[in-house]
Image (cartoon, rainbow, N blue to C red; front, side, top):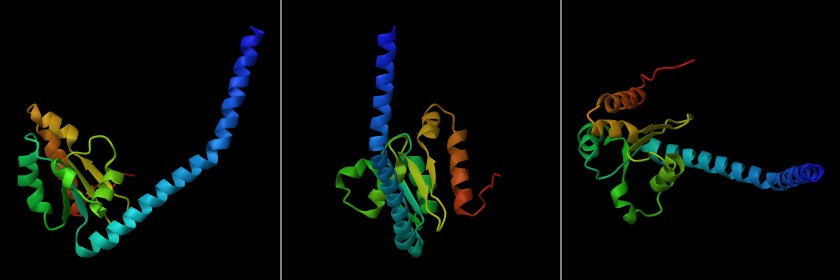
Length: 162
Protein backbone atom coordinates (compact mmCIF):
# COMPACT_ATOMS: atom_id res chain seq x y z
CA UNK A 1 0.00 0.00 0.00
CA UNK A 2 2.77 2.46 0.95
CA UNK A 3 4.72 1.51 -2.18
CA UNK A 4 1.68 2.16 -4.42
CA UNK A 5 1.14 5.50 -2.73
CA UNK A 6 4.78 6.56 -3.20
CA UNK A 7 4.64 5.47 -6.86
CA UNK A 8 1.49 7.56 -7.33
CA UNK A 9 3.16 10.57 -5.70
CA UNK A 10 6.24 10.16 -7.92
CA UNK A 11 4.07 9.94 -11.04
CA UNK A 12 2.20 13.07 -10.01
CA UNK A 13 5.47 14.93 -9.33
CA UNK A 14 6.94 13.77 -12.65
CA UNK A 15 3.80 14.92 -14.51
CA UNK A 16 3.99 18.31 -12.77
CA UNK A 17 7.68 18.73 -13.67
CA UNK A 18 7.03 17.78 -17.32
CA UNK A 19 4.08 20.16 -17.49
CA UNK A 20 6.13 23.00 -16.02
CA UNK A 21 8.98 22.20 -18.44
CA UNK A 22 6.79 22.25 -21.55
CA UNK A 23 4.50 25.12 -20.49
CA UNK A 24 6.68 27.73 -22.25
CA UNK A 25 6.36 25.73 -25.48
CA UNK A 26 2.60 25.54 -25.03
CA UNK A 27 2.44 29.30 -24.47
CA UNK A 28 4.57 29.95 -27.56
CA UNK A 29 2.33 27.66 -29.64
CA UNK A 30 -0.81 29.43 -28.41
CA UNK A 31 0.79 32.80 -29.11
CA UNK A 32 1.78 31.79 -32.65
CA UNK A 33 -1.73 30.49 -33.30
CA UNK A 34 -3.26 33.77 -32.14
CA UNK A 35 -0.80 35.80 -34.23
CA UNK A 36 -1.63 33.68 -37.30
CA UNK A 37 -5.34 34.30 -36.74
CA UNK A 38 -4.85 38.05 -36.37
CA UNK A 39 -2.66 38.20 -39.49
CA UNK A 40 -5.22 36.24 -41.52
CA UNK A 41 -7.97 38.57 -40.30
CA UNK A 42 -5.94 41.62 -41.30
CA UNK A 43 -5.05 40.09 -44.68
CA UNK A 44 -8.70 39.28 -45.42
CA UNK A 45 -9.79 42.76 -44.37
CA UNK A 46 -7.08 44.48 -46.45
CA UNK A 47 -7.23 42.28 -49.54
CA UNK A 48 -10.86 41.20 -49.69
CA UNK A 49 -12.94 43.70 -47.74
CA UNK A 50 -11.19 46.61 -49.44
CA UNK A 51 -12.45 45.16 -52.75
CA UNK A 52 -15.98 44.55 -51.52
CA UNK A 53 -15.50 40.86 -50.82
CA UNK A 54 -16.34 39.89 -47.26
CA UNK A 55 -17.40 36.26 -47.63
CA UNK A 56 -15.59 32.99 -48.18
CA UNK A 57 -17.94 30.30 -49.49
CA UNK A 58 -16.78 26.68 -49.47
CA UNK A 59 -18.90 23.96 -51.01
CA UNK A 60 -18.56 20.87 -53.17
CA UNK A 61 -20.28 19.10 -56.03
CA UNK A 62 -22.37 17.01 -53.64
CA UNK A 63 -25.81 16.10 -54.98
CA UNK A 64 -27.20 16.97 -51.54
CA UNK A 65 -26.32 20.66 -51.53
CA UNK A 66 -24.74 21.72 -54.82
CA UNK A 67 -27.98 22.82 -56.47
CA UNK A 68 -29.15 24.66 -53.33
CA UNK A 69 -25.83 26.50 -53.00
CA UNK A 70 -25.74 27.40 -56.68
CA UNK A 71 -29.40 28.48 -56.81
CA UNK A 72 -29.86 30.19 -53.42
CA UNK A 73 -26.47 31.25 -52.06
CA UNK A 74 -24.20 31.97 -55.02
CA UNK A 75 -26.56 34.37 -56.82
CA UNK A 76 -26.87 36.52 -53.68
CA UNK A 77 -23.20 36.20 -52.71
CA UNK A 78 -21.37 36.15 -56.04
CA UNK A 79 -20.44 39.84 -56.02
CA UNK A 80 -19.06 39.69 -52.49
CA UNK A 81 -17.76 36.13 -52.15
CA UNK A 82 -14.51 34.32 -52.69
CA UNK A 83 -15.53 30.77 -53.63
CA UNK A 84 -13.68 27.52 -53.05
CA UNK A 85 -15.00 24.26 -54.43
CA UNK A 86 -13.93 21.42 -52.16
CA UNK A 87 -14.29 18.96 -55.05
CA UNK A 88 -11.49 20.84 -56.85
CA UNK A 89 -9.12 21.00 -53.86
CA UNK A 90 -6.36 19.13 -55.73
CA UNK A 91 -5.97 22.19 -57.95
CA UNK A 92 -5.86 24.69 -55.09
CA UNK A 93 -2.64 26.58 -54.77
CA UNK A 94 -1.23 28.41 -51.81
CA UNK A 95 -3.62 31.32 -51.74
CA UNK A 96 -5.12 33.55 -49.10
CA UNK A 97 -8.52 31.90 -49.54
CA UNK A 98 -7.08 28.43 -48.90
CA UNK A 99 -5.13 29.62 -45.84
CA UNK A 100 -8.23 31.35 -44.47
CA UNK A 101 -10.35 28.26 -45.07
CA UNK A 102 -7.86 25.94 -43.39
CA UNK A 103 -7.45 28.23 -40.37
CA UNK A 104 -11.06 29.27 -39.78
CA UNK A 105 -12.83 26.23 -41.23
CA UNK A 106 -11.48 23.77 -38.75
CA UNK A 107 -11.59 20.03 -39.24
CA UNK A 108 -15.29 19.34 -38.80
CA UNK A 109 -18.43 20.26 -40.69
CA UNK A 110 -16.54 22.57 -43.03
CA UNK A 111 -18.40 21.70 -46.22
CA UNK A 112 -20.50 23.60 -47.11
CA UNK A 113 -19.59 26.62 -45.05
CA UNK A 114 -19.66 30.39 -45.26
CA UNK A 115 -17.18 32.55 -43.37
CA UNK A 116 -18.06 36.23 -43.05
CA UNK A 117 -15.37 38.86 -42.50
CA UNK A 118 -16.30 42.23 -41.07
CA UNK A 119 -13.56 44.79 -40.39
CA UNK A 120 -12.49 44.94 -36.75
CA UNK A 121 -14.86 42.14 -35.75
CA UNK A 122 -14.36 38.42 -35.36
CA UNK A 123 -15.34 36.17 -38.22
CA UNK A 124 -18.72 34.50 -38.28
CA UNK A 125 -18.92 30.91 -39.50
CA UNK A 126 -22.05 29.35 -40.89
CA UNK A 127 -21.66 25.60 -41.08
CA UNK A 128 -24.27 24.06 -43.37
CA UNK A 129 -23.24 20.41 -43.03
CA UNK A 130 -25.71 19.38 -40.30
CA UNK A 131 -28.61 21.38 -41.75
CA UNK A 132 -28.04 19.67 -45.10
CA UNK A 133 -27.92 16.29 -43.39
CA UNK A 134 -31.44 17.07 -42.15
CA UNK A 135 -32.34 18.50 -45.57
CA UNK A 136 -31.44 15.17 -47.15
CA UNK A 137 -34.12 13.55 -44.98
CA UNK A 138 -36.81 16.06 -45.90
CA UNK A 139 -36.32 18.45 -42.97
CA UNK A 140 -35.68 21.70 -44.80
CA UNK A 141 -36.29 24.17 -41.96
CA UNK A 142 -32.73 24.21 -40.60
CA UNK A 143 -31.21 24.98 -44.00
CA UNK A 144 -33.60 27.88 -44.51
CA UNK A 145 -32.97 29.05 -40.94
CA UNK A 146 -29.16 29.15 -41.28
CA UNK A 147 -29.53 30.82 -44.69
CA UNK A 148 -31.72 33.50 -43.11
CA UNK A 149 -29.19 33.96 -40.29
CA UNK A 150 -26.39 34.35 -42.83
CA UNK A 151 -28.18 37.00 -44.83
CA UNK A 152 -29.31 38.80 -41.67
CA UNK A 153 -25.63 39.17 -40.71
CA UNK A 154 -24.67 40.23 -44.23
CA UNK A 155 -27.52 42.74 -44.43
CA UNK A 156 -26.64 44.19 -41.01
CA UNK A 157 -29.79 42.93 -39.31
CA UNK A 158 -27.97 40.60 -36.97
CA UNK A 159 -29.74 40.02 -33.66
CA UNK A 160 -27.65 41.17 -30.76
CA UNK A 161 -27.67 39.00 -27.66
CA UNK A 162 -26.67 40.33 -24.28
